Length: 93
Image (cartoon, rainbow, N blue to C red):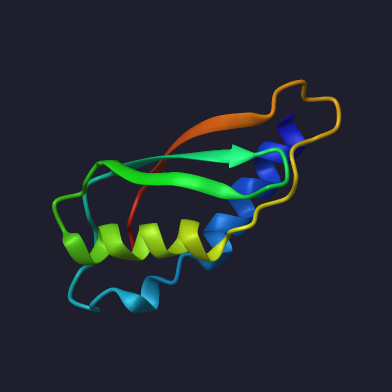
């Protein structure tokens, strides 16, 4: 599952376009998100569980997750039909 986790992280990171955030914002408090990945890689139930306090940064991170949909299908050796994911974003230029 480690390789799968890395591929999900890389996909979301590559879709997180820092250019969508005002250049005047250099850093932001960590924000937390949660979502579900279904067996086929579809992403559902995306939510910001702890915002950064900067709506522009939160929207940018949310767009990164939504733009990554669908993610790779769950690994064949994973027995469940879905996996709940919690992750955080650290915004720094």
